[in-house]
Figure (cartoon, rainbow, N blue to C red):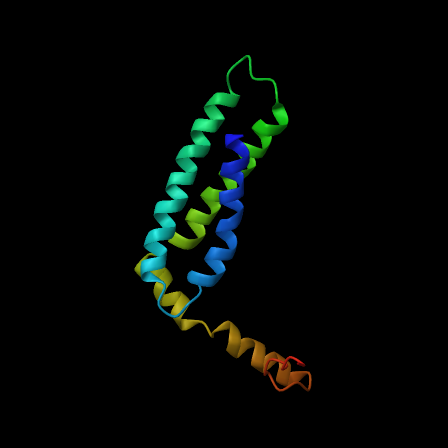
Length: 119
C-alpha cells in the first residue's frame, strides 16, 4: 500500500536526522533533508487528496496521513526555520545547555560530566 510505504520512509527519517543533522557541520545534510521532507510532504498531500474523496471510507488512514503531514511540517520548521538577526544574537548570548547542566550538577554535588558507560 502506498500509504504504508510513505509512512515507513517518514518514520526512518528520524534516525537519519539524529545521525546527520546533529553533527558539527550539517550543511550538506540539511540541504538533503529539506529536499526529502519537501518531497514527503508533497506525497502526503497527494495521499490526503485521495482520502478526501467522498467514496474513500477509511478515516483511520486519513487521520494517520494528517498526523504525519503535521509531523513533517514540524520537522521542516524545526530544522530549517530562518532566524532573524535579533534572535540569532539573543540565542548566542544565552549560556549553552551544556554549561547550564554543568552548573546545575555542581550545585547538587555532581561533576557536570556525563557518566561513563560500563562495558
